Length: 345
Image 1 (cartoon, rainbow, N blue to C red):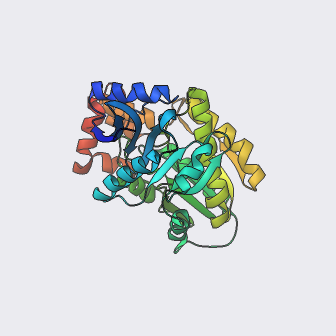
Image 2 (spheres, rainbow, N blue to C red):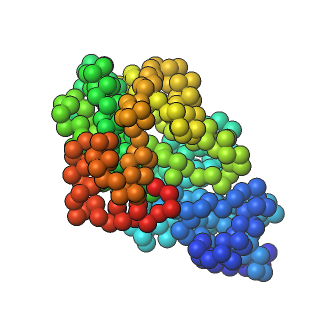
Image 3 (cartoon, rainbow, N blue to C red):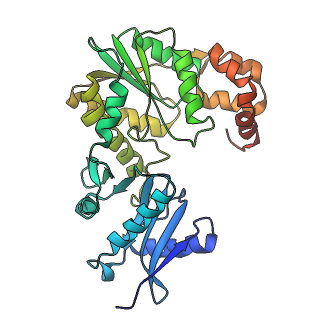
């Protein structure tokens, strides 16, 4: 076999992206849209193995069938891990097909959760999720009926506040997990802070950073799931599995509250699957009707739409005072500028 060359590609380059895409297509994969770094191994100029990452997630890893069994996966992973470490990222994740679990286990990754025949989430720390849950539990009240809500809050609205107040009235402890990815219009730290400020009047509500274990659609890869509906359902099942097998039991959560979703089909699918899966794990699910204003359901997307239109007086009617104060602050100017410059909010 000829000496295999390592080559770094630029995912932002259309020609190099197409070159990577052509190789992945032969392996039955596609190129995820969010790649920030890609590398390939070539034999005589032909790509025979590839790997990429976005944030701390390794993805789009593939080896040509004719070159499998020669340790190329290890070489690709080693390259990607070294590059991540140079960037200061030491806690890494991989989403892969279950049949590849052994390969990545031998390379230092440990399974977190799995959707049979679809996907397995792995991380390079044996006790990663355990430490996260210890962090969440620190200082948290214990005892009584524990409920949970997962929110994005882009931004925090009166609709979110109503859902949380509704749930809090039915729990002794309410855990609120905020999705932790900076692909929303409002940064993670801002969304987290606005939730904290908006529920400060509820003493038994604890707000947590979702971090790596509340899986958002933005971080869940699509490159090895061809059909969109399958992708949506697999994402939902994996996220719910992590919650049911790790988060719920560790915190004693027995009830999950979700807002009714009349508009977004993706969230509607997620809610349906949650109702199918969680009760079997001892976690009840309650879908809470949305609160309305002037005949329309209050939503974060509506708030962003009004911000885009410059209708701040109308925004004021849909968000808590704490959120509105933030929107009027100097800190929010850049966020508002970006929202107003987009074609869609």
